[in-house]
Structure formats: C-alpha cells, structure tokens
Image 1: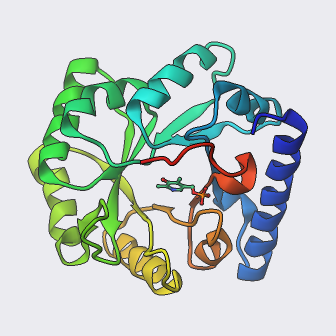
Image 2: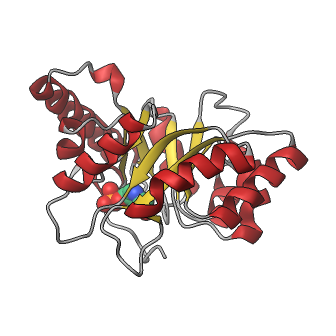
Length: 228
Ligand SMILES: *Cc1c(COP(=O)(O)O)cnc(C)c1O
C-alpha cells in the first residue's frame, strides 16, 4: 500500500496504541521506539511514512534495503534503518554499509564477518543479538541455552559491542513468556535495548519491557508478496 493518507492514519493509530499500552504499563511513551517495517513495500510507502514524521524503518533483506534506502538519506538525515531479517555471512559487508542497526546477529561466523566488515567499512552499526526464544528449528536466532555464552563471545572474541536483544516468538504461542525470557536475559547482561513485538503482539511486548516494536502490517497493510 502506498496511499499517503492511509499510511499516515495507520501510523497515528499505531502510535496511539503504543501510548495507551505505555499508560497501562506505567511507562513513558518516549521509552518505546516504533520501527516501521517496510519490507516488500515500495519506496513510495517509505516516503509517505517519512512525510508523516516516521524516521525508523525495518527491512529484512539487505538487497531490498540497499535498493530503497540510500537514495532517501540525503533528504532525511534523521532516518535510521534497522535490518531485522536473517543475515547471510556473505552479505555482512553490504549490511554494514546500509544499516544503522543490525538486529539479527545469531551465530559466531556472522559475528566475525560483521566485525571484519565494520573494520573494512569504517562504519559501526548498532548490533542486537536475535534469540530463538521458542528454540524453533526453522527459525533464525541463537538457541536459548546458548544465548549467554554467545553474548560473551561477541564482546570478548569479536570485539562487538552488543546493545540489546531481539526475538520473534512462535506464531501460535502466547508471546508473553518469550518476551519475559528476553527481558530477563537482557537485564542479566546489562543490555538496554529490547526489540520485541510486531503488529499482532506489540502491546504485550510493551507491557513486558520492549524498547523497540517492529510493526509492518498495521502501518503499510498486508504485504504484496511473501517476505522470506
Ligand atoms: C515482517 C517482520 C515484522 C513485522 O511484522 P508485522 O506482523 O507485519 O507487523 C517484524 N519483525 C520481523 C523480524 C519481521 O520479519
């Protein structure tokens, strides 16, 4: 969907729901950032959101992000791009070039590739570790039991400064125990950023401490083709 009026009103509605969830949880709405997930939607949709005052965006494919976002940067210096999708090691350099935040670090090889790409590019996006809180075999993210050791290895072996955690709970499950697990793990490691909550569950995520919610469908409508 690219209708600017519809995108603006959807954004306003999502922000109102975020504010209401914050009020219920006794949280400051300024403590929750909205990442507008624009994957599969054209640059015109991103432009409509920018015009409505939205500056944080999420994409799950490096090539798609690289095709849409660099051209928008000069006119929108406050814009920030989060990469939220599974990342191949051979895309690490492109990811470091295009992203301001990489939310999907989940394995040692990728940690090494990102660290090397950052040295080569002289650019250091913020990095979050994705945790597979449901330990689902098909899903990206570090398994629950390995998360603590992986977090230590990122810092100690790869010199990567990890600032937070991200998760995508299993589709059919109550997301709350997953959000609680992520929040507890972050607290234990002194990590301030918690990226959790999507169109279907962002209010629950805010209740459980999310600092970033990633919302696509509720802003841009259903996706024109499936995003891998
Ligand atoms: C697509 C996607 C979202 C947004 O999902 P919606 O249900 O459309 O809000 C959030 N996070 C990740 C990692 C995604 O891939």
